[in-house]
Structures are given as C-alpha cells and as structure tokens.
Image 1 (cartoon, rainbow, N blue to C red):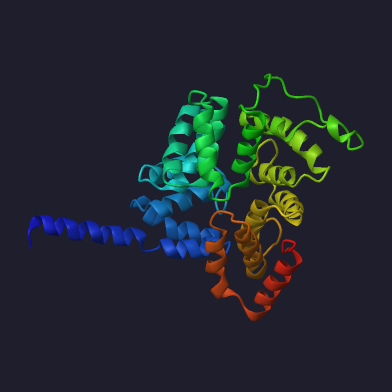
Image 2: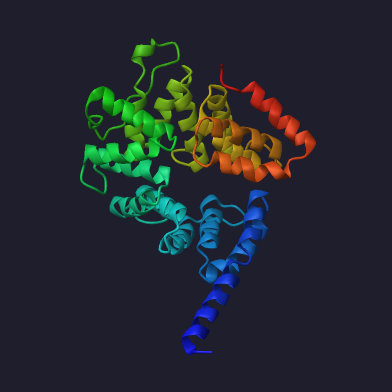
Length: 332
C-alpha cells in the first residue's frame, strides 16, 4: 500500500477511536451520570474529538462531576472551538465576555461569537448583535447589530426579537447608561410607570452590572413580566450576580413558562432531563413535554431534543407529557 494511503487509513483509524466513546458520554450526561460522562469523554477529548472536548468544557463550567473551574472549561472549549465547533465557540465567547477564569476580553468574545454566528448559532448571533449595539469589542454599529439580531430572531430567539422591536420603536440603539448602578427599584406597591424599563436591565447586564440587572428584573417580574422572570432564572442558572442555584433558576423558569415563555420552557426541559434543580431524578416525561411546548413556539433545537427523548418514554411518562402539554397549550 502506498505511504499516502497508509497515512490516510491511520488518520481515519485514530479519528474513529477518538469518537468511539463520545455517544456513551453523551448518554451518561443526559441521564445525569456526570462521573461516567467524564470517564467516557476524557480519552476522546485528549485525542482531539471536538464533541468530547465540548462535553469536558460543560462539566468544568457547571461543576458537574468535577469541581467547577472556569479556566479549565475555557481550555477545553478553546480546543473544540479551534476545530470549528460552534457551541464551544459560543461558550468561549461568553467566557471572554464575562471574564470567567480568564481576563475579560470583549474583542476575543466578539471573535468567537462571530465564528459561531456565521455557523448559524442563534445565541452567538444574539450576543454578537449586543456587542455591536453597545460597541464592546467591536466598533458600535447599529446596522450590524440589526443584522445579527435579525438572524437570531429568524430562528425563534425571543431576546433578539425584543431587541429588534426596541430598535424599531426608538429608531436607534438604546442610550448609553451612566456607569453608576441604577437606583433600587421601587416597592411592588409603586405605580407601574415608576418601574425601571426592561431595557435598562439589559444595558446593566451588558456592562456586567448583574446586581442592578437582577434588581430591575425582579421588580418587573413582580408585575407579571414573563421575560423578566426568565432573565432572573438565567442569572441563577449561570451564577451571574448571585450564586449558582438551579432550584431557584427552576422556580423562575417555571413562572415564566406558566406565562407562556418559550425559552423558559426549553430550559425547564433540560433541568428535568438532567434531574437538576427542579427534581432529584431524571424526568423524561416532563422533559419531553417542555421541549415539545418550546418547539411549538419555535425555540432553537427544542424539537430535536423532544424527538431524541420520545423513544425512551414509558406509557406512564407519555401520559405525563400529554397532561402537562394540555395544561400549558397556547390559547386557540
């Protein structure tokens, strides 16, 4: 056999070996068995399997089966991102934007968000749009912000849709906000017009003032704002401005979902799928229902997760899923 052919065969063999245990790790992760996921992913990740490297990044980012370590998460995400893995590129952008385990670097954040955005990842498109809107890591450019918000909104991203609505309503990007934190929100008894605007919370979040964003969104959530409920849940899920608390995140997501918020339904699906926060064990029936409800609202890859779970459902879990879907079906 010619040497060139031998090299190709060897390369393919190593690639196959590197991928061999990735599905087993995926299955373990989805069931909440993070120790097994770590064991199955580690060797393929060290051999260069991008999907396994992404999995290792998630384990270290969220402290699942290992001590939480943002710097190690960044290292694994970077290995996968360099191979064009869009989800790792998005997560690495977030790490650089927020300075989690690395020095904050908005330019690097923009670089990785752009790579993932060009691959079609709506979360990266949304975050790149925000950077262009406020001029972080890139020159402020409203036209570019609208372009990327539009790309994310076309895939069902509700935050991007809200950003486009705001820009259309005002004709310009939201005004710059002073570096000081906004005043404490008024008590729930205050008149609605005295509440800070939702966009003020977004701007506080974008400049890294998570305490201010939390105060603003909690005040708005008390008035029944579904998006504010969702945003508070996401702060608790990510540990921004508050300690990571998946039980608290689940409670806020539940309130948002009860108000019809599609992305809250999507994240509830993952909490039930992984047996975290809202439950102590994996709940396939409830995960299936929430993913299906999110899919009906056009949220990301919710339909793919629903279809992935469906073959696992027992008859009891399918009835449970059907019951929950009927309770939360949108009005005719």
